[in-house]
Length: 239
Image 1 (cartoon, rainbow, N blue to C red):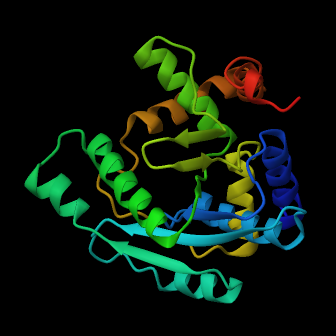
Image 2: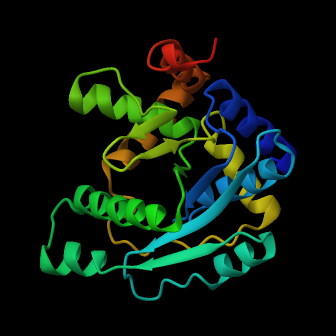
């Protein structure tokens, strides 16, 4: 996928769900993975021509994993002219050694989001952009159906009243396969997660299940996404 295509998908989502207003200061949570780096490219590109002015700041919550080096991302942000903040934490030590969690993802996510939201407010941003893509939408819906017994997925725009912070998801219309192609084409400086739970989560189960179903019934991923659009997101689409 070329940058122009990424920008087109991003602008469509931003317009459809009115994600950006004039003067927004948007934080991009950078995990080091391909999705968050693609989002950084997308918002950086959109910022240059979008008719509504906004600014972008990149933030990484460093969980404290050994041998997790962010130098390539620092250099990318410097080249883009985007401010970059790294928040040092002891989340890895707490989750895996102090608490010794058998299901570490829930606690880690809660602590990581808390640290990220606090940092966002300190930088003066009023919005945070998450890098959830189309596959994430469908996988979340599957997880909700299988483990919660309800038809649900995350919202394109969510206001967190306790933090006075708005969450947006500009990559909503982008396929993960396209992000992988974008990663290779533009040689994104991906910093692979050293987390020992990586690849062994419920989300990974949903990802593999969706891949299997889509192989047996080609096009089902897209039809499921349309079902989410017509159900969960219907009332949020602009009129």
